[in-house]
Amino acid sequence: MAKLQGGLPAQQQLEAIRAMKNMVIGNLNRKTLFVRLGVVPLLLAIVRDGQEEVLQLQALVALGSLALGNHIQNNFIFFCQS
Image 1 (tube, one colour):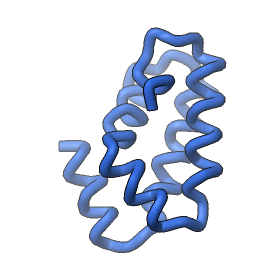
Image 2 (tube, one colour):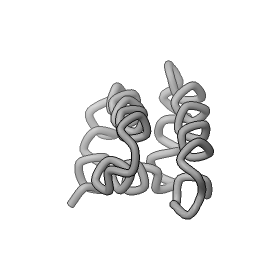
Image 3 (tube, helix red, strand yellow):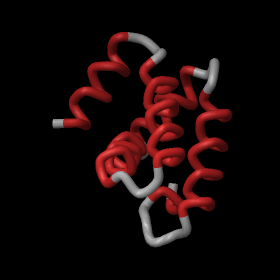
Image 4 (spheres, one colour):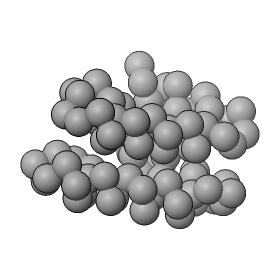
């Protein structure tokens, strides 16, 4: 998660996003853990700040993967955006 907080080269952030995305695919417990640890605002900041298109795209894909859970988790993700 520290690699997503900016200040690092885009390539390192990209690798961190891909690793996180691969860890959560198909695992609701890991998705929930990452959401609770605060990854959603970090991913949204990457999308919003527009550093590099490929980085933004991977952040969006990771957000989509996190959202593919149950409705309680999706409500939490929505709450994080507010």
